Image (cartoon, rainbow, N blue to C red; front, side):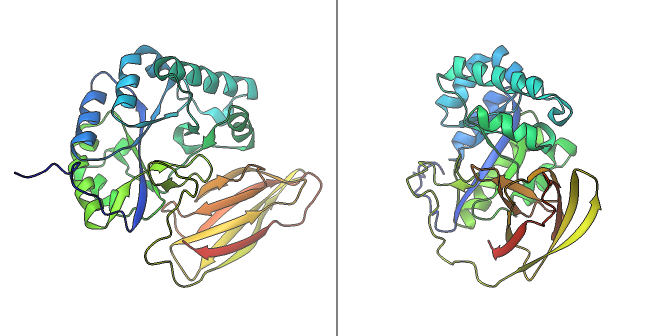
Length: 307
């Protein structure tokens, strides 16, 4: 008698990754998605839109009952960066309420639609107790990627990283058994996303969320800043990383400054909003950001370590 993958003892010595599915729940596919994840011993974070959650509360409860984590993906999936602070708050707050109504618990994680973010959006999210979560790997399922291409994308995941997938595609559903097999072959497990670090960690979170990897990263990297365009109230900077493709760059702002936008990287933020941690998102080893200087034109400091 063979046991199911879920019943087998998992070897998580290489760490944890975050599987995420956006835009649910959907009556046509969510139940099938949950069944496939459970059958393959996987847990994932479901970033639900508020209107779908409101209209399909039983499916939100089914996500919770299946052991999935549930995040906020705005109410109507608009371009939030083009909206006012009050409009953003309405989008996020209504979603919080719809999900809490269904599950009894308000989400702690927020995925901005299209991965678009700015300082206003991050501020509103923080006020609602939400941690912004982007992604490290884009499965491209929304862009017509085949099941094989989705599986290949998931094969690039490393400890702590997060992959973007969606609730509604048959290709994504069909990729689940192969994704599970690939993770097992690399001693990786599907984990939760930590609200404090924004990275994938062991499912219970724990007091110290990240287990030290069996083989700690070796090598070093350097980060160099170059100036971009500047205006009266803000300036652009570009950071080029050399020495490693698996880098983590920390950008520390000065007191008066804040970052209003970023590109070509996957950012997370500390509670103060003054320290940005940038990781690769598949766009190469150069990323950029816009600094609202607040009267202080001194460049932020950057440091690089291997992830």
